[in-house]
Length: 467
Image: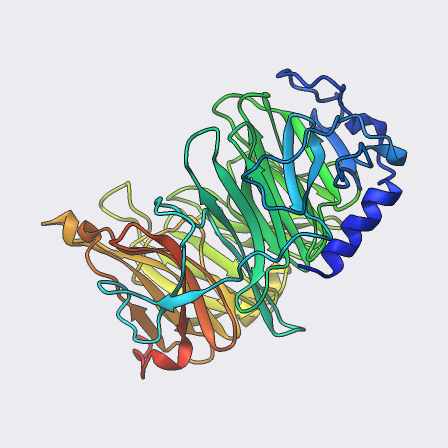
């Protein structure tokens, strides 16, 4: 952590951030939502919240800090500095020039019962014994640098007042590159994305009645914050690409990084599986009948990509892409049970494109899909795709399994990485992504650990021929 991050922290403390006065708060923080009207009803603070060194330095425009320094709680590591870019009442902490590096990611062999693969390793979670120890992680493989990153949470709960969470971005092997510490539960950070050298953490505060996010460039302190009123039971979900921050609530809306104007991506039917790459956004519309994939970019707006709007017996779901290949499930044939999706399911792939005619001409069938719809869809990378598949046991639900399907895009050969019965408290939850040697996923273990696992692709064996 003694690198670009700390150099920027030091310069920010000395020089100020030059942000808009709209983001400043009164010197006496209270519990009322301090958000301004405009756009979606929130306050933007680009280049805001430079960490304070405890002397009232830069967290507002021109070096004038309207958040009085409060000092570090004893649970925050020495050498960290206050970050008040989101709110005086939501104080986060980032490493300053004198901070000691936090422990890097460590891995251990997956215990048994666990995934039926000898190469499996899981991220150690020594900071807690609490289930959900890494939060909801995100993954990004930087193809240019051949380096993979995870965005996750380390949290320890001694009591409500002494809850300490480290929101972290780290290479899967090596020292941490970003760490934001929160103390207590007044404001909570969530992992909402890492892609194209940028990261996004959602923020929610029931106590203040606000929600929003903070984010910035990989390896640097946060350089922006956004805040809006929080409507009870109607939390916003955030998504991101290297070009866009996406607000997902009663539709889809986006702002370019560094800009305040919001554009409408989609309104109408509820979107699902929202994800993007660069300037493109992809999302699914429709439920069990009529589901399809739409795409959007700023120049062309929203339009159908893979969709059969007048055919209730065909649909598309589980879409995933990393900007090189696209993978999805194509289904046809109505089920007897209306609570299930289409009965004849196939895994399809095509080279990356946002043009429906091009996709239709280049689509290939890989094999049958043994699973149903999932929340996250396929993770795609380095010529492979993966997702969770649930194998139910109608006679004894406790004997069902939550496994992971891996499929090779060149020839449709596939593998099922099995897990013990769900009754033991085990299962794959989400496939996160690939390097060209490994697949990464989030998994639950019988010892209550919820963590990230990595499995070597060359350990999967000969695989199953496509059907």
